[in-house]
Length: 315
Image 1 (cartoon, rainbow, N blue to C red):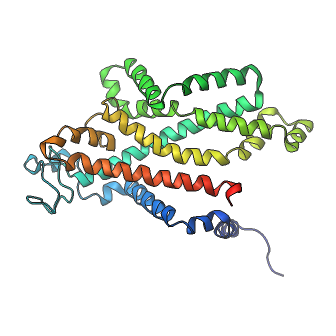
Image 2 (cartoon, one colour; image 1 turned 90 degrees about the vertical axis):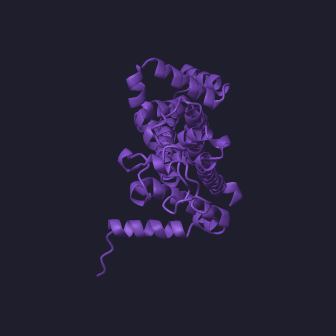
Image 3 (tube, rainbow, N blue to C red; image 1 turned 60 degrees about the horizontal axis):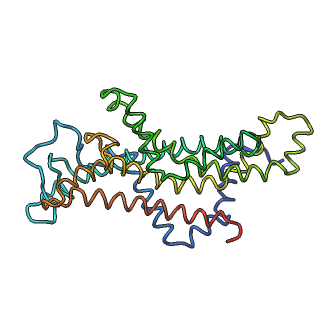
């Protein structure tokens, strides 16, 4: 008699088979633009994870940097050095390696801030939509007040408050934490409003009423039964918010209130290179700026496709 017991390997294989036979995978295969965006995004993530291994140089190792190599143009221009494909900056650091390290930091801050926004926004939206009453009114009024200001201004305000509460040494040591909190706390509203609306629909359905009847605690109903059914739109928002978080980090760093000049984020590289843009050393800022634009465009294209792919009305 054949053994019909389900094993973990069989379960994974069945899940993969259903995915590759599903509408989302077929939609992905039918969109060359989406496939290109996914490939570009994968390259960035690969470089972010394995940056120290694939970068030609370590641009932030002072022992390996020579001031004699400063301001070299890209390798294909006159006076270019084959060792530095995209040239060097004013300190002799390899621009290509700096971009690889910078993308790593930008993606780290972007992901961490998105996770913070998601956890805070989903939690508040779930509580607001399920509990209702004065709690719902208070959370939504706070959200509406925050929506009256651009997210970057909220991030600047939070950044300034946090930095004002620290001494100079702590500001340098906690630069990453300050940026993540500033960006994360400025982008939770969309998650909260979306989850609140979905929760208000779900709480009136029969399975929730049945859970109330059999005596399940409201907290368990909210987190175990309603939450999995309201997370669909959250994935789309998170994908788009990742691009916005990366732009916000670059903006704050460019304005001088993000990471210090010694840190290799894309925003910092653009700000440092901007000082030498009109002196003819255009590659110091143009290449990091182009890398940032390509990354944001690829993530946005993936977010747009995911929004359409998960919309049942467009299938």
